[in-house]
Image (spheres, one colour):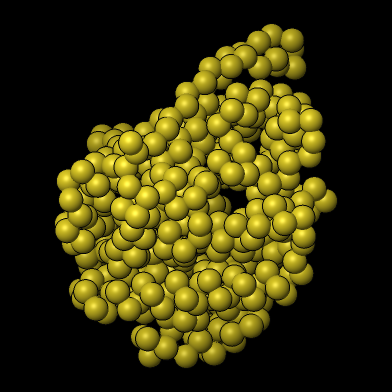
Length: 420
């Protein structure tokens, strides 16, 4: 983004989205104000011992946005540019994501301002355990269940779970999700976001007159979500993946890529670029490729007013968070391009996180087949509900998804009432 571009406050964007849907649903001003304010915010400044025995003070946040539908759920990210307003916005979006797939959760998010790329394993462990200890009064299986996010992973969650358990005096696996399977993680969690995205694409295809067998697929971002979605669309539904990209660039093959070969090439070289028999392709070009399904699975703000008119896909399935700006949404709606919005298309991850939590509090574990069957059911039913609202109200799928989600939260708020 050019330096001269104005900085967009993500929480202001989140509040504008609430206002748009509140107008549609005719929500009263009092309830609307509740929806636009986080329930609870925590800011902590804490010291961490570095490898050279010096101490550095880090700032961390946890925002619990809404608990009307159940305990809060949301990731923790480590990044130099974490801000409180970003965390507030992400917590709001997690609230709607959980509601649109009808999970019994509210939304939360957390973050620490740090640069994990320049920290050792030991420094990251000490930072995580100290931040986790600061969170202990505010998290727990019945209150708020963190998960991995940007630059955090299953090891991060294992440290938080252990820190929390040491304080309680017994093992509490349900305090976090996204854990290693050895300490209560769930089968299928690693591929859940991409698999859920593939299921939603499968459900949407007949509504746009598309047969997935033989359909052409382009993927921007051949990481965890993008690669899993691509493989499932190819292996299970018979689609043909023409192009994939990563942060280094991309590749294209008119008659389809050998995805397993591409993955081996990426393991060896660190990128999909240079895969034998393919043509080079940029991250910008992949968005405008002639393909039936486009899966933006990389960064936010990729589809804008500048390139939306050049998109040739019938379906845009957002495996990434926020890849489409509002101006592009308008173009897609006019062109009758079906957008599967992020709060629906990439909700497979939080759905299987819910399954992990449910297994933990039951003291029971499900097979991979059972996890995938349950995920299939949730994603299928959620798409059907969003599509029905879009048809009924004559709006795009993103607006419809927000209508479904916010209405569910409002229903919970009204039924519970406002204390005292």
